[in-house]
Length: 307
Image (cartoon, rainbow, N blue to C red; front, side, top):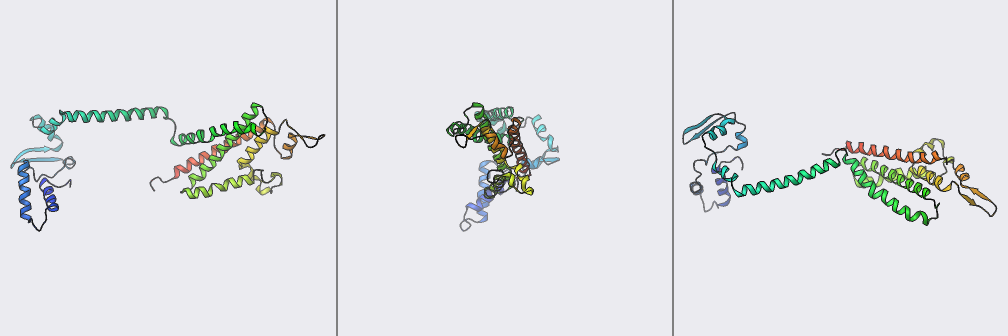
């Protein structure tokens, strides 16, 4: 419709609206001519070019009632007519009208609203990527805060060591273990294309880590060619840190006359219960989390967003 002249546009509408059984082609043309005369559009009824087409012209020649009104560069036509004080009166009237001022105020208000929002957002997250923002938005409210709350409730209910430092070590271990587990889930989810596949494959690494984490199978009795799997198990590092926190300095009474220190159990499990032995488990959990987050980010970058 944008390429039709005024006459062609009215003829198109007449052909659609008027029944051909009762209105001939001549009748339709007559009605169109009548409308053009009533609207005062007879002189421009066959004018076609839109402004977007006009912008592509290099040379322009305008005719008015058989006489040349302008001939020259197309981009100088508006300036030429403005020098002759021959401007479009509709444009001047609209720009000076209350409707134009009202629309301008509404548009300016909307622009100011968005400008403030963009400025605030830019100041707050100027150097933060959307991925890191999403990770923080998921880990802090969904992983760290619930662990703190439930650890405070369950720790003393289970009768564990009452020292506050031991409680903090317990909470730290649980938080890092939870973050490491979420990081593994991020990698699996970013590597598959559907939610159903993610639900299926996300359980596989956790099953492997649970089997080779020392909870179901003693690591000392594991086959040598499979022993390396224990070093990628978050269960191993989490349980070792928990054992060190709760077993060191404890005495367990087998009978009334026989006691076993907790360190003996840790030695039997080949667990380093020194101070560095505790913190190396925390470092390992942080390392697993960092590597998995980096892999998840790379997998997301590889996704074809336009597919």
